Structure formats: structure tokens, C-alpha cells
Length: 153
Image (cartoon, rainbow, N blue to C red; front, side, top):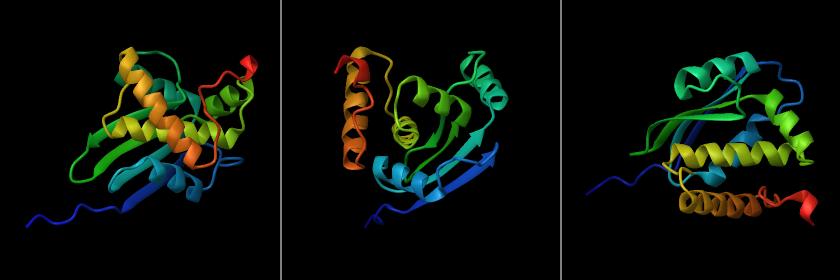
């Protein structure tokens, strides 16, 4: 008899940047839980651009800060991994894209959580499937489709 897999989410939020104006831990929990199938041991680290750039260079070979990095460690028996988010970039992107800041954070957490569970967007079919999954999760959370071009309406 196999034990039932855990549905518990153990989420820690680490602030390596100014906390002013950032979402609450409860927001991160809600967004991560919405994208998680089963249980999870997840850390979300909010960093300044220099740390984000150093991590992106070391692990992806790209010498610039990025909005979210995913570091998956395990999927079974529960998802375990880290998400690194750069609030300065998130705020800049939200402003440039004319999106509410909370909606952009929700999208990036959902996107990162899907990566931790093995989703990717390396080819067109995978990208389309991942975008569809993100859109459905975000709609259930009450957020608009992040892939709609606001200027096209």
C-alpha cells in the first residue's frame, strides 16, 4: 500500500532586497498553490538585479538579470525547488506592458512553478501548451490573459 502523496505546500519567501511594495507572503502562497499539482517544498527568493544577473550568468550563461529563474530539484514525491524573482525587473516590465503589478507577479510565480514541475517552452508546441496552462491558472485566480497584447484590443 503506497502512502498518499502530500498536498501540503511548504513555501518560504526570502527577501534579499527592499521589501517595500512587494506582495505579501500570502499572495505568493496563493499563486504558487494555484499552479502546484500535489505537494511542494518551495523557496521564493526576491533579489536585487545584481544577484539576479549573477545567477542568470552562472546557471544559464546569460549576462543580464531576468524576471524569474527556476531551480527544480525534485518532482517526486513532492515538487521541490527555488524561484528567484527580481522585483526591479518585474516592476519595470509591468509598467512597460501596462499590466497591474500583482497580475505580473502572479504570472511569473505561476510560470516558475510550472517550470519546477517539468514544463518548458523550448519548442512552439510546448510553449503553446505552457501558455495555455498559465492562462487557465491565472483566470482561475481572477487575472487576465498575460499573453494578450493590450495594444491590439
